[in-house]
Length: 347
Ligand code: KG4
Ligand code: ZN
Image (cartoon, rainbow, N blue to C red; front, side, top):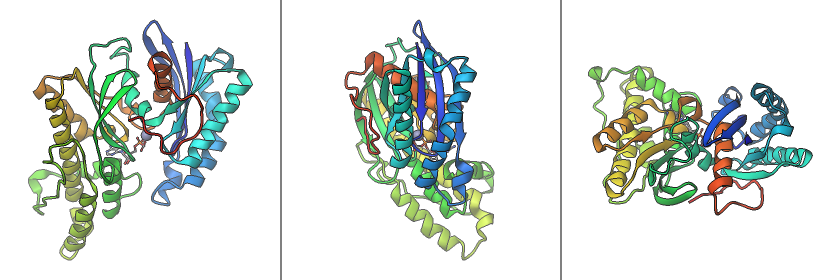
């Protein structure tokens, strides 16, 4: 079975061809065209520009993806398109393109949830196998620009929300604090790179950033206080230091704080539920510190930790094709209509 995935929910245009055969998945192609340079000038994603770029790029990216996969549209069995959540103007472009393709080539089309796509980026590697049921229930930490959630995956396409952010998402906290430090868009990876420059033995600031809700007995998160604390701290420190002289220490402490909160809540949820594995997904899953701390947690608790390959941590169409496939196989609550829905939540 060949699935064509289409992703245009934010600032990456991506099309992938996924092959599913005898329980295994092969990524025949996954083309990603990033618009980071275009939006960097504005300090964030400009929806109208993103939509225009998607419109211009999609036909070319489709050709590249088919060519690399050595297939034609005739060979495709299913089209999966990101229908939400995301920027409505960007989603509309992908959905219209997918509908036109499905109509022209008479192919089935499935609406795919972007966050479910991120979660299923963990199945893009050959391990775990789609048919492996032993890893359920899975405790899944979903961390992206718009979401921070702890989800219990009871089985394929069956979710229970344990907790989520009450204000900013973890990715948003990275992006907003990076901006305060004068780091360019996208904030998360740039803040992480800045933090890597810091040697903790040479600490001069004695920073203690707030970790709101870290001790609350639930699985919810709060990150907006961190942004405010960093804003005032930087304003005060700038009276004594040049920002360039303290930037890497600040970045280091911010990253440590965000990761500490995420790990503490994940640990609490892991201790209170019978689980077969811990999983990580969403754009923030690219963060090296988060990956290493989660690996440590898994070792301490003797629970396997599964994370997406680095190249599938950020937005891509292979994960969308994968989520489309599992929904065809296991999804009981599939959407009948394929429409762009900026606020589509799976839990
Ligand atoms: O999943 P994603 O690509 O887009 C959404 O669906 O929201 O996530 C983007 C988020 C951004 O906030 C970005 O700053 C963050 O993921 N991010 C990172 C890293 N790479 C991307 N945050 C921390 N460290 C990283 N290495
Ligand atoms: Zn995403």
